[in-house]
Length: 239
View 1 (tube, rainbow, N blue to C red):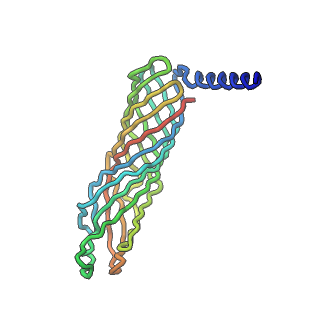
View 2 (cartoon, rainbow, N blue to C red):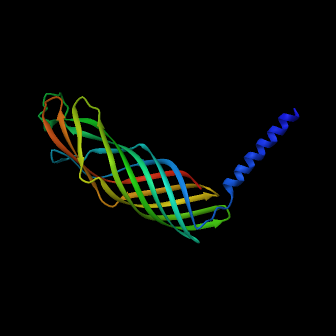
View 3 (cartoon, one colour):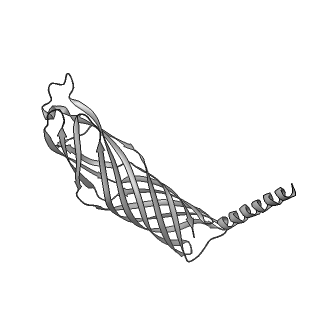
């Protein structure tokens, strides 16, 4: 019994020591942190066309994506500069009406449109450079706001459409690069920090597709022009 009580006491002291290490006041001229988290993309569609005919009846549904980043901060009292190297996987779904009548499909009783779902998955490497200000900086606790540009390289874009009516194939994006603007709120407790950020694209990216109508065999082209609109949440640790 005495051995058990001693073991429990040592365990509590160890946990207490670890908690004190994490919650200690951490203020240096520079620091490095790592973070992981989630993102929710809700792209803004500028135009969506099939064979140069505009598709106006569509709905966008967000999906959860993932992120991981290494952050380097340079501190100047309450101000700081924070460049990062990030990996993002963003997902979204566009539900739209495919105009069957454009393919000469007049033999489908009373039907002119088929509701299709186009799923997107974009993997990217991203380099934001943010300027921040500590609104609260008292002991181990802090709150900051930050904003700035983010350079992005989309190294892999996948689009999937499961349909018995039409087959879509993603051909290319007009540019693999993008520039977004980021605004964020950060909360720190010692070495731990939480980041909530919102970003939007400063320009649009156009994705080109070819398609084949399964029922008629007719082929054509489609184009989707959109810009980033995304929320992110991440949890990190400062070394």
